[in-house]
Image 1 (cartoon, rainbow, N blue to C red):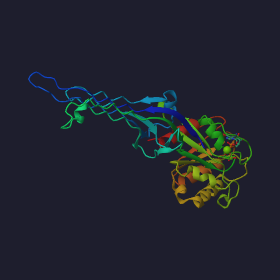
Image 2: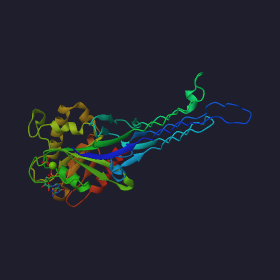
Image 3: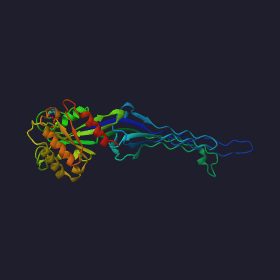
Image 4: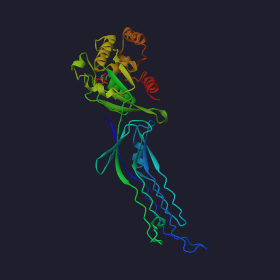
Length: 331
Ligand SMILES: Nc1nc2c(ncn2[C@@H]2O[C@H](COP(=O)(O)OP(=O)(O)OP(=O)(O)O)[C@@H](O)[C@H]2O)c(=O)[nH]1
Ligand SMILES: [Mg+2]
């Protein structure tokens, strides 16, 4: 599984000190204590956002400090509170305390907030310490320290799109064309033994995540081949791209291939087959028989599924597919 991880330091603001002062005014004999309280230090709060999907920004900027509270002043003036700061983290970020290993928070929804370091309370000024028998108190408190923590942030990349299809359909080849992922690619079934995730970068810093999982074969739900165990990695995706090899070399019928995979998906989970799907005819560069492509296109049309033709080798249709996926998975 693809995990992004960073270590950061957060420091909330210290509280301001309480003040020691006495009221001194003309015509006001024996003015009482008038030292104001210190302001509270600012907090460091994390907020989950759906507009980011990496922790990269923290790698360049690993320290975050909130402002300290101002000290109290004479005439019972309370110091200003320090400004809090907000750190935006992608949905899916898990926060750990680096020192204790404790898991502090798991961000699962956009807009969720969690205060990772609390600002220190301001100290009380001497105005609070007066009693009937103690009218000129000199006690005043220092501000409390703001919390300081070393945190480890972990982001489990959730795939937006899952690639499904027979072994050798060209799933790994496609992900290697559209992302920086470099999975093993070879001309034999079950080259991919574990899921690969790739981040597809688009213009304007937009991106989405593709999961390439091991191929399925007939009877996968009964354990044939590598089985259906990897389908859980694509259960939470927004879109499935169903890749079907339309070249002659494999000797199978593309329409039959498509249906076999659909049955395997259905026997794994009803929700999975109901997911939005696009059909992708692969290896167009070596597809000699237009009939095979046409039959798959017809099937897609009959099921009302978008249809794309690509060759990961020549690049034909790859860019169009990349953008068509973006349109379907990005807000
Ligand atoms: N000619 C041609 N060959 C391709 C194309 N795409 C993939 N291949 C070849 O098909 C074979 C299988 O490709 P992979 O990407 O490993 O297939 P896969 O779907 O990931 O297969 P598994 O991991 O076994 O499930 C490799 O030899 C690729 O070079 C294509 O567009 N054209
Ligand atoms: Mg593969």
